[in-house]
Image (tube, rainbow, N blue to C red; front, side):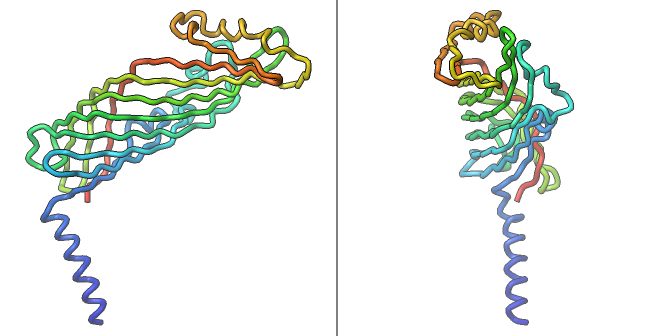
Length: 237
């Protein structure tokens, strides 16, 4: 009985300590990202002063969104067969501006982010059917502006209304005949693969074709502006 009372006292003390000395942690889900097929969980830890660090990890599968069709993420020459999804993660360091309470008000946050995604397409060239394994890795850095609000001392809303940076994409596309042909020369389709990007000269110039015995591996590394906007919702503790 005495042990039970001690456990209960400890739990009550910890709860009161959290309320009295301020919440230092928050967990949030990506509310708006979910509509785009990005399912994220964010953890924010408040440090000294008005600074905090936030880590995000999630799973992305755009085709699970009712607002994104297969055609949206499929180049005109391809047919989407399977979207395997991928990993989405980021790290932010937040500076809250003139905040009277930790983790509230306007903030500026430099960030780093990474994502990868895999999809399977099919393509037809000169009567031959090819499977196209499409893989993309992205590394990005930038900064965002936002406003965070705590309601009833427990619930939290995080509005990041402007984020901009630079992303580096590493795209790999592996072409392989669906009906294997040991004597096929994959160098014969490099021009056809390049035509997919001929309307975007910046990308077209960066294509790098690697011909192998049983496939064509095309690499496409490039930089592109990155943007962030959305709302997270969760609770503090």
